Length: 403
Ligand SMILES: *Cc1c(COP(=O)(O)O)cnc(C)c1O
Image 1 (cartoon, rainbow, N blue to C red):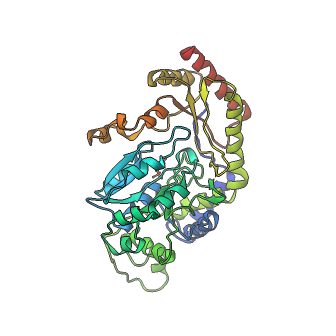
Image 2 (cartoon, rainbow, N blue to C red):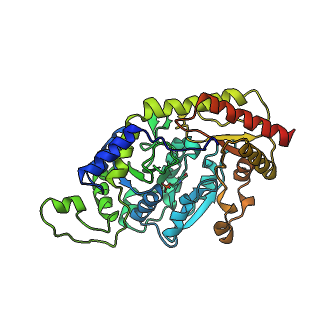
């Protein structure tokens, strides 16, 4: 069976993890701090906090901004549940909006229509690694009329004076928008290093701060180090270096990254541009070359004049397929020993969100994109022969079902 997205575990990763295990320091320590520094350099953001998942990173960013009861947070209807779940954790309301037809990202005009005087945050998601329309989103929140609607209810919100843009860039580390990396495009950006993501630390995530003047992104980082570790004003490493005594300044969370995770991340980041992305692009380009002259398929957009994907997920659509036909195609692809997936079930299709009253019919484009979508295997160790097997399995299965 060709797997969907196994992690790349080679001798380099193993050696670096073993080095950490033998160092005597396995939780948050020097490697986490170094990984944070490298991520800041790589993304062009202003400071970076590593955490134990993207979900945790999104939640701590919302909590830092003071999002709670009575607030609204705009999210795409087409995303992984984590994007909306964290809004629910904070007691706020996820306001879903529909997505684009060409790519799968949140639609900016639909964002505009969804803004109210309760909107505190917009969370664009770079689906499949393809960056959202960040210039348009950042100018939207800065528009005079939209600023006037914003009603801050704490000092941080007052200081920003507008809706915060918190990018869920779980898929898009290394992606570029007008020459700049994700992480440097919005107020705050969160990456995921979960096992299936492009760059993995098994589980893990990073929060990149890039807030405008007069915010001090280094100070915010220091405060969030405390907030992500029980509100303890010294971490375990600091306690070993001098005074044991510490204070707890708030009932904080437990979200810190360990040095074991960071050691994987350091190896992955060092070879990310020259190795990982090169291989992933090769796979994307191969799939595109094989499906492009066949009008049974709608190909994903992943490189344009302004945008370059991180080549995370290859979102192939089967022209005219119903949801049932797509499911049958997938069943047949699987019998040909190829693992495929669907990214994602739009949130209103999930029982928790439909139970809250969200209706799929309010997001017709998200449904149209979803119903005929099949995600193909993309991972470092995929061979040329396996890529061809994937293409053949897809074409044969589509022929059987669609004629
Ligand atoms: C994977 C993913 C997340 C969650 O990442 P974790 O690190 O597993 O918490 C959030 N949003 C999107 C769009 C994702 O695909």
